[in-house]
Image 1 (cartoon, helix red, strand yellow):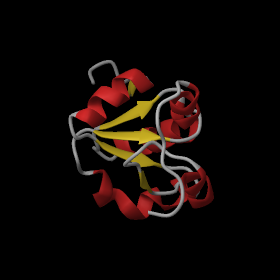
Image 2 (cartoon, rainbow, N blue to C red):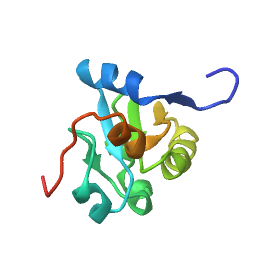
Image 3 (cartoon, rainbow, N blue to C red):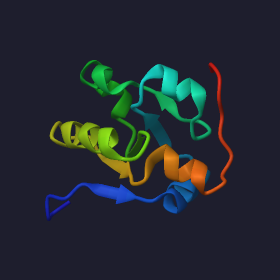
Image 4 (cartoon, rainbow, N blue to C red):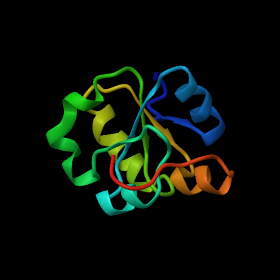
Length: 107
């Protein structure tokens, strides 16, 4: 983006993006992801993001965590390396609080 700001989207926009086939990566720890996640979210814990850059090659890739902080850090890191990433504001917490469906358990 020309202004240097990272792209962000709320859970309403994320729901529309997912309906269109968007890729969603959850950067929370595996235990958090197993407990409750947005349907279809792929688990890549924040600490492993540098080793998994190829997983962010889909354009754009939506990135989520619990509330938006870790995903913002991941987006900053990935954007600096040329990835087209979009931070989900409010994170999984906002998704769950909105009453949307979720998945749990191991994939």
